[in-house]
Image: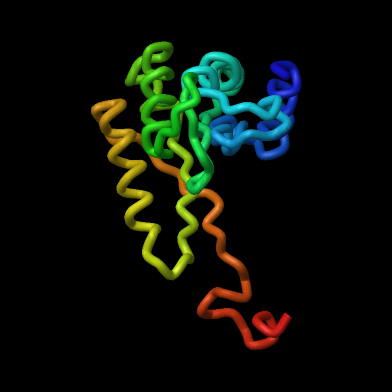
Length: 168
């Protein structure tokens, strides 16, 4: 998939006339699905076997890369099949990446992507962001750039949505 990533990055950079674009290449690798051959993969395996080569290609072309956001309520398992929390999964991904690239490179070239599902009414936003931020701080000893993705906002649930939009 390396050539595909390189071609995609090049095309986007040419079309936008920008090099410093942030890419989120993978998504929710803590879940079992066809891409993982219906098995759980450890955070370390994801960094070593998937993320590292994609990140190298993107950053060598001047882009930045977002660490794969785990599914916030998905089950995470380690290499021994033990259940671990999402923040621990993220922390272990970052520790593995830090071994390869070092802290300076990570702070300059990456962001931590998270899926906090902002518009839920039970207040999980603050707790999830705090949990992810603490995991990143434990792993890196610094506060990395964070990008919030998949906020779970629906047009019909937005306070400013028109009556016509909400009725659909």
